[in-house]
Amino acid sequence: DTAVSQTPKYLVTQMGNDKSIKCEQNLGHDTMYWYKQDSKKFLKIMFSYNNKELIINETVPNRFSPKSPDKAHLNLHINSLELGDSAVYFCASSPRTGVDRQQFFGPGTRLTVL
Amino acid sequence: RKEVEQDPGPFNVPEGATVAFNCTYSNSASQSFFWYRQDCRKEPKLLMSVYSSGNEDGRFTAQLNRASQYISLLIRDSKLSDSATYLCVDDRAGGSYIPTFGRGTSLIVHP
Image 1 (tube, each protein chain N blue to C red):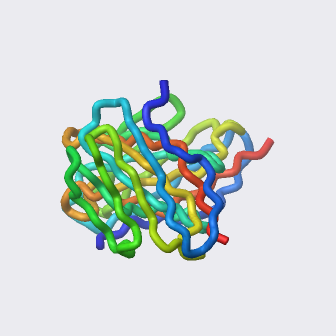
Image 2 (image 1 turned 60 degrees about the vertical axis):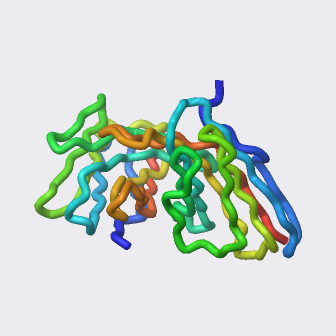
């Protein structure tokens, strides 16, 4: 059983297109995240949702819009894709509180914008 | 934004060697840290939590030095399979459960 799943795994698209990435977790966690890992491997948080509510919104262009229909799902929609959006996008989940608030990551979505 | 700094390496060591990585953090109020391991083209996975009293799991030991604001990871008797990137995380670098990852330290264990 996959704890955190993402679709699609690979996404190749043209500049200017709109695309979505879906994420689901079956761990019962309250908090979900989106991260971007660029070509230099730097993993940066983009958004965090707790029980369907946005709690973190880092400096991300408003072309990126997260949506959480329920606490098990956090989707990422990207409008007007740019070359610089090419990266690996990871979804993750964790308990909201607690000492051992480890994060469980999905397998990643490798986005290439041509 | 409070930062988390790591030496990117790579650390190139022979099998059986002991290797240590440090990770500095800038938020003196931070209390919760982790080490993650990321293999090439894979997602990060938790390696171990870092407790105030230190934490040991087999060949791996994690320690926290609050006075100097760094955490460390020691790997003893390195195996080829330890080759990966090791990421440290300050779980509250942003002050409110905003996890911040370091850039990662690359380890290459060779025969």
